[in-house]
Image 1 (cartoon, one colour):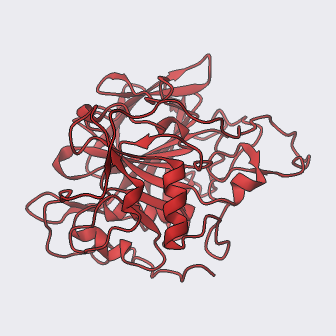
Image 2 (tube, one colour):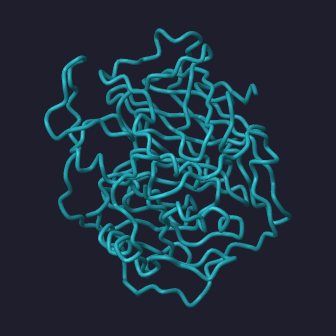
Image 3 (cartoon, one colour):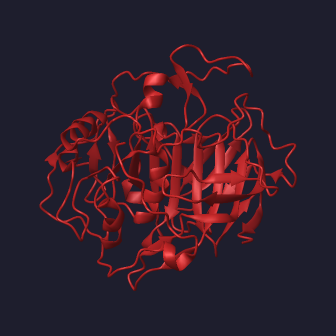
Length: 387
């Protein structure tokens, strides 16, 4: 076993929050980075994920498995490898990010200053030429990341983060030390560019991350003693249009402007492709490598308890809970759901109101974790937490 199981966070809000004296999160100098002029946009050829549908009841081809992230068919070699969980900004000055479109699951959640931040879970990352720009992490992201048994990639973070990143079972690579520590494992994986100003110009690559994993003794393959590959429940035929779901309603437009008021994140359904197109600052959010807009098959809205930790506005979210509210959105429809998570490595499960687990459609998933005193607009109507 590579790692010992971490302690569960208690479901009550006060016990699930990590407390301490906060310091403003900055990226201290000197930083162990090299200078470059601009991010590379040419990638080496990557092994493609096979998206053909296998008829129900038929076995997968030899050497293939269903991706835990997307439910799509992939090489068993990729299935066995740990993904990365990489922290990326939503700041206007930081756009675009490179490699973001490769995320099978993309989280967005609020941080201090009414600004959201993204965490991308990416499989098949070893040969990606450019990843970033990379920003700092918050501890609540780590508890969502641990569900995927990943390598956590970030650029430092505030005092509160050290409680979890100092754990032996959390394998992280960071461009600078978390404020309360002197440790910056794997910092040589990062470099600065001149196309953007600090702190929006720190990048890495799959090759550099693999090298640092080997230097740090991080296993590149999953520990099956802690990783649950049955994370989401998939309708492998891709046939869940929510037409049979009680209480489903139209969801061609999803606005998170009241949840993430600075970025005004939103998604628009394209009936021709059956995908939702992601927007940021009321413009298409694109991957800088491909120039293509981010698209998702599934959207999960996850309302969560939160607290403001200190006068500087640092937040804490309750990652572990039982039957809190949310919405599942796919194929132009939405339905109210409940979610629960009972342990550090336990997947967050999403359920219909009758507590049967939702069947998601194979493809990429966007998860918006929303403060439970804020609302989202789905199909022109505001919806808030009912918990």
